[in-house]
Each structure stands twice: as structure tokens, then as C-alpha cells.
Image 1 (cartoon, helix red, strand yellow):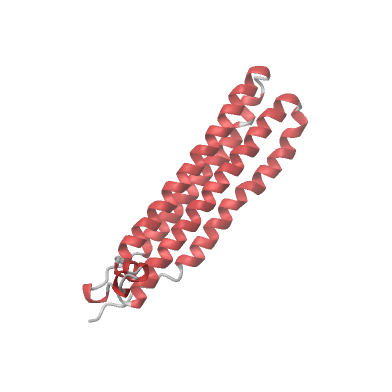
Image 2: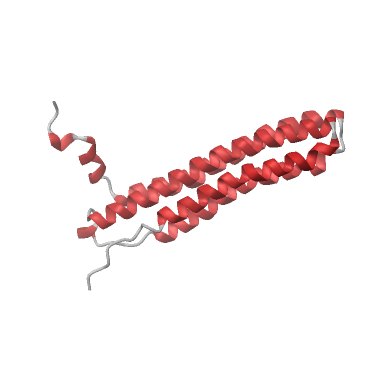
Length: 177
């Protein structure tokens, strides 16, 4: 058995909370953009294919691409909010419990928002794809499927809300005067 000083918990405590914060912010924006891009890819490829049969669907089905792009915007907004949570801490208090808690809160918030938006982008992309394909067959289905797509895009908003609530726990130690 390896000594206690080289355990995972010791390693996690020795990593700067600013590193965890930066990784959380990067995950929030990076994975959100990945989800948006993936959703746009899924929706766009079906939209282009279905537009061959019914060119009339092209303009009104662009709303699905806009919903996917909103997922990336959610990630950018949360990354800006998380960036404003960072504060300068004296080097003697970097590894204080309050600093570690703030770093972990920003990290967890970034992970939640990033992966919620990844799943939201996929969900909206798949629904947007089926919206384009079904609209090409029967135009009366467009509004019905669009309502379902709106519910799918709400998943990203739920992730943003949970991320903002979690980042509220990020309070850094007060500077000693």
C-alpha cells in the first residue's frame, strides 16, 4: 500500500483552487460549444437532405439551428459569470478550506453547465433533425415538433440555473488588512 501522502485526496488538495476554477470555466464554454456544434451538425445535415425533396422547409427550419446555437451562448454566459467569481487571494490562504471550496464550486458548476449543454445540444439537434424530415413530408407537423424542441432546449436552461446556484457557494477568503 502506498503511503498516505501520495493518495488522490492529498493530490486534489495540493492542486491550486485557481486551476480547478480555470478548468471548470473552460469545460463550461468548451463542452457547451461542442454540444451546440454537434446539434447543428445533426440538424443541418437532415435539413439539407430534406430540402432536396421540399425546398420550402429551408428557411423555417433554421429555427432548429438557432436553438442549437443558444446552447453555446448559455456556455459563454456561464463562463463569464464564473470568471467574475474569481478573486485574488494572498498566497498564504490559497490552500485554505474556503479557497478550496470556492475552486471546487466553480469547477463543479462548469462541469454541470458544460455537460448539461452537451446533452441539450444533442437533444435539440436530434429533434431538429426529425422536425426537418417530418416537415418535408407533412407541413402540419412543424409546429407540433417545434414545441417538443422547445422543451428539449429547456434542458440547457436547467443546467445553467443549477450552475449559477452552485457557483453562489464560491466565496474566497477575505484579504487581511
